[in-house]
Amino acid sequence: MTTDTHSDSQPDPQPQVPGWIRRHLEEYARDPENARLFDATQVGGPKDTPTLLLTTRGRRTGRILTMPLIYGEAGGAYVVIASKGGAPAHPGWFHNLSAEPNVDIQVGAEKLAVIARVAEGEERARLWGQMAEIYPPYLEYQEKTDRVIPVVVLEPR
Image (tube, rainbow, N blue to C red; front, side, top):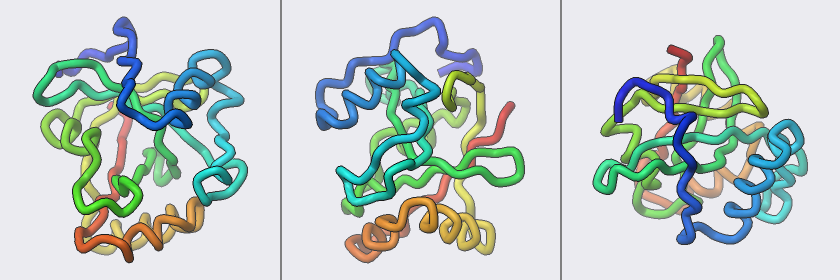
């Protein structure tokens, strides 16, 4: 992936994702301002959970991939959690941005080019706590897995 944004590329429809994720992507395409606040009660979270769209390029396939993710804000950056519901492996999007940290996000109707980095130490602890307040199931996800769930900071570039 280059440092150019992917706004001219159509997101992959990603037939492998669960139906609720596919529906959320479709809603975001139709009405991004309303879709930004996701009713996460269907997956154990709060009703108005803030979501953004993260667009990466597949590290092996080169395909443009877009995933809705819960986010928080910190110091002008956006924060997301690579939880994959507490699965033993990191989500594919995390591997993609680890290979190429220059990615794109959409927050409501606003599209931004960002650079991703993994928070460490005190910053990770502080941001993890902030994100667990936004979406409490993250605490359960961490208990389910032996891996340390990455906290990813997305800084505008």
